[in-house]
Each structure stands twice: as C-alpha cells, then as structure tokens.
Amino acid sequence: MRTLRAAVFTIFVASIGTLVLQARDAQQTASAADLVLTNGRIVTVEEAQPEAEAIAITGDRITALGSAGAMQKYVGPNTKVVDLKGQLAIPGFIESHGHFTGVGEMKLVLDLTTAKSWDEILAMVGEAAKKAAPGEWIRGRGWHQEKWTARPEPNVEGFPTHASLDKVSPDNPVVLTHASGHASFVNAKAMELSGIKRSTESPAGGDILRDPSGDATGLLRETASRLIKQPELQGTEREAYGRKVLQLADREVLSKGITTFEDAGSPLETIDLMKKVVDEGAMGVRLWVMIRQRNEDIASKLTHYKMIDHGNGHLTVRAIKKVIDGALGSRGAWLLAPYADKPNSSGLETTPVAEIEQTARLAIANGYQLCVHAIGDRGNRETLSIFERAFNANPSKRDLRWRVEHAQHLSAQDIPRFGKLGVIASMQGIHCTSDAPYVIERLGAKRAEEGAYVWQKLMKTGAVIANGTDAPVEDVDPIASYYASVSRKLKDGTVFYPEQRMSRMEALESYTINGAYAAFEETNRGSLKPGKYADVTVLSKDILKVPEDEIPTARVVYTIVGGRVLYHQ
Image (tube, rainbow, N blue to C red; front, side, top):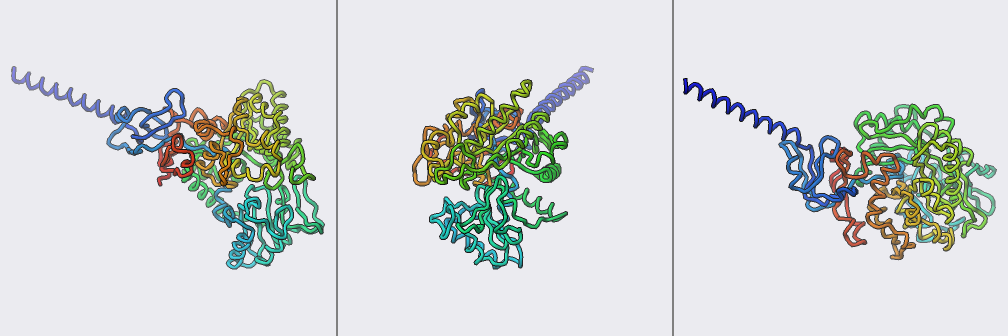
C-alpha cells in the first residue's frame, strides 16, 4: 500500500512538474516577439527613453525597447533576430511632402535631372525620337535652366527656344517638364497638336513665354502647361499604367528608408486605385494623401473619401491641397515686390484667393486639413490670411494643423504668424541648397536673408517644421535632405545663411515625429515607443555623430514597415 501511495505521489509530482514546464513554455511562447533588432544604437526620438540597444516587435507594433540583454527574453524559437552590429536605427523616415505617382512616373520618362546643358537634353530627345513610333509623344522631366553650365543660344529669360527641339524631333511631339513641375517646354509639333498658336492668350495664372517678335518660345509657365493636349489612356490600360506607377514609387521610396509618404495632391481617381492596391496588401509604404481636385468635384464626396489609418495604417485621406503660386526657379512664385532679375513681374497667383477661401470652408466643415502650396512671400501672406480668417470664423475648431507647403520665402512680418496660428511649415531642406545659387539673383540679398528658408526663425515662433524632398522635384532621398538641413552647404563649399541651420536632432525630428504630427499621426508613428507601429529605418552610418561631410555617404540598410523588412541592402 505504501509502495502504491509512493508511486501515485511520484506521478502527481511529475504531473505538476510537467504542467509547470508547459505553463512556462506557453508563457515564453506568448511573450516571444516576431522580430528583434539587437546590438545597435537605437535613437527613439522619445524623451522618456531616448536610446536603446535593442527593440522587440510583435506583429506590426513595437513591444519593448531596452538593452540587448533585456530584450533576450523576447526571443523565442520562431523569432527573427537581426544583429545591427552597432548600426543606427531610427524611426522610419516620413516624407512630409512628395508626389507619389510622380516618383513612379519619373521611372517611365526621360530623366533630365543630371543634364548639365540644353545640348545634353537635345541629344537625349534625339535618341528617343529615333526609337519612337510615328506620332508617339516623347516625355521627360527634371531639367532646370539655372543648373546648366551655360545658357542656351538663343534664349529668352535663360530658357531655350523650340527651334532646336524641332530639329531633333520634327515629327514626334515633345513635352519636357521643369524640375519644379511648374513649367513645361514643348516643341512645335506638341504646340500644333495642342492648338497653341501665335494668337493663343496666356491663361489666368499662367504664361506663354514669347520671343521679342511675339512667337511662343515653347516655354509654358504654371497653368499654361494645361494647354498641352496629350492623349490619355483609357479603361484597363489606364489602370494597368496606374498600378505600375504605384509599384515603381513604392519600391523607390522603400529603398530610401521611407516608411510613411505624405502625398502632396492626388485626384479622387488615383486615391481609388491607391485604396484598391492597399486593400490587396500590395502597398508597402504607408500613404497619407491630400486630395487635389476642383472644389465642385469634391464638395459632395469629402465624407466618403475621408479615411484614417485604413488598411492597417497604410492609407489616410484627411487633407485637401491647393496651389496659390508657382516656383521661384521659373519665376512663378508670387512676390510682394517684383523679381530682382525681372522687374516687370511679381510672379503668378495660380489659384484665385476666393477659390482657396471656398476650399477652406469645405475643409473646416468636413474635418479636413487644408494644405496650400505657397513659395513666394506674397503667396505665403495670402495663405496665412486665408487660414486666419477661417480660424476666426470657427472659434470652436481647435488644433486644425493646417499647413503651408514649402513656405520658402517669407516676409519678416509673417514669420511670427506661423507659431501664433499653429500653422505647420511643411518645408524641404534640400530645396534650400538646390535653389540657393539663384535665390539672391531672384530676390536680392536683403529679401533672401530676411526670409529664405528661415528654419530657426520659424521654430523660434513655436512653428513645427516637417521635412521632405518634394520628389520628383528632388531625389526622394531623406539623407540628402537631412544633410542640407544641418549644413546648408552648397556644392562650392559656401554655406547659405548658416544661422538658419538645424541641429542634427532638430533635423531628425523634422523627418520623423514632426512629420507624424503634421498629419495627426504622432500617436502611432514618428518615434519608437511600445504600442506604436514598428516602422524602423536602419542606416549604415550614424548621421547624428559622424563628421558632417560624411552624412551623405550613409546608406539605408533596412526599411521595416509594420514589423516587416521591406528593403534590405
């Protein structure tokens, strides 16, 4: 009997032991993360825990951060462990102002961004014309007359005339979009097919540039580009093209470490396709989209199209985009006083103030942010006044976070208004160093010093600056824009008004948490914190510590969106 009792007791103890082991194993399995990044320098952009060595990720969210040893408890048999080998991990870059389809389309046209002369562009168009089918349109983008080594001859305001383009492509229509996107250059065939004649008048908010005899040169500024009549794809071909553009853009931005892309204006048709691709699980980057279409086309549809964090955070639509002026490079930015190098022009009001006032009413009534492209000091002043009138008319509406896109050239009187009104300054660091060589020529030294890319002046008012590239105007690379933000250094080694430089941490915040704040998304992205989306970018060099001139040599090693490694060098 005693032997039987002993046996039963032994079995009982063994059973208890087994249950304890099973419970422990179950607990370990339950706490095991899907992904652990370890042995790195993780900068969180969170004051409570600014740095860590490792990060644990479960599903699409951050589980915990801490030392490499502390995060070991999250490693289970199925956990993927990535040894960062001392590399820098930061919150995923947020591109706060770019054109997503433009990034994709850039891959399908002639890339003119590296052309150093008009002759180079002519050679590229000539080669394309030899391969093109009869009547096929030849398209390109990225030229900038201020970045050529010499001005073409003949020229008008530094722009070439179409005769040289006609010689290399007499039968194929050609349209070449300016790097800024605010002007186009076309040949005679394109003008013929578009019905642009000597008698054609410049449209409101645009300009057909003419030579001294009155003939069109081929340069179409701002809204005049809309006169170009290119054939449009229809039906399944249109959707197939759109899908290809989105796929190419997605691949490109992920390779640059971008985890959220704030798209600066797409029509409803494009948003429909974006949603379809997101719902199919085929979009890697997260998209935050501004609607850009006529007021009358969107007024009754805003409620239907508003989306917050759709598709596990891959699509948000909660803003409307308008464009009040043009770009400085093409002399379309709307200024308070004439251009220093063109005294008969103060730029262009590309969209009437009254129309944007109507958009403001639509936005505030439907809970949308209003984002207005404004580059010149007059454009910025008018935009801030539109915002202020809307805010005063709706005193119960708070924390609206309306945005000025670019805010490049400001009057000293208007700088404090950003902080006072709580307006986001959505700016692009890379524009500063890219444009600087001709800014003083356009504005004069006094205006340039007073209000050109005045990041520190704006931040001192309490304004939030969100960074980006305006891609495809510039390469979508955040590292280049980060470097421009902290250095303001030009290719010749000079520094453009150095007192306005950002610190390295200010620049990182402008590319992470500030971008999230500018989109009402700071609760789920923009920093590394338990509970937030596991959006992480790993860089080959520590851009917060390396010598300044080494920053541009840093490369993206990993881009992680929602805990998934979507790019690995």
